[in-house]
Image (cartoon, rainbow, N blue to C red; front, side):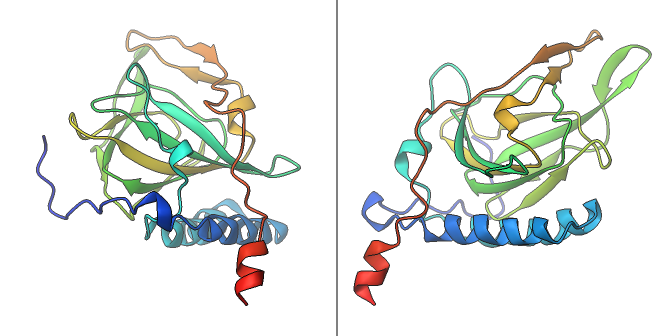
Amino acid sequence: MPELDTPVRPAAGAATRDIAPLRDFVTGFGRLLDGAPDEPRLLAEGGALLRRLVARDDWLPDAFAQPDPERYRQFLLHADSTERFSVVSFVWGPGQATPIHDHTVWGLIGMLRGAEVSQGYAERGGAWAPEGEAVRLLPGDVEAVSPTVGDVHRVHNLFDDRVSISIHVYGANIGAVRRHTYPAEGGRKAFVSGYSNTLLPNLWDRSAELRAA
């Protein structure tokens, strides 16, 4: 198991889950997009919103944090009604990794629990090779991807003995976007990721807090 310079925060108990931080993030991100920001502003201000969300680990419902022993899982947490953006929890089982892949839209990745490593790739001479240093994401860290700032990478769970979870925001309904994986020997293969869940968390039931007030 890798040694980290900073401790990994333990997940809060299920009894303390309060989904209000995710609701606040969704409404804040919608307001940001209402202003039609250019991409640099969107990634900077959206990244700040995401950094605030992943600064705490007491809001993600357990149903959207469950790993699969065979492969990583992508749970839809929210999709904007006009598909301007979507929010997912990306759940890694021990040692799991993606293939080299793209997104085709802007995206923000915030580390919630555990840790992951992102390695950028570039095409050289018809094959795909690592480009630049790998980025290690620890809880609270945020990274951006897009066709403008760098869109092709491979990601893996830093740990071989525990689950890691990151929260992703994309500029589309990402489960319905036609994307690509890139075999190391060259070429590309189309894929549509879909989602690991059929039900969404209820962000909009404010009844408990209203009763308490």
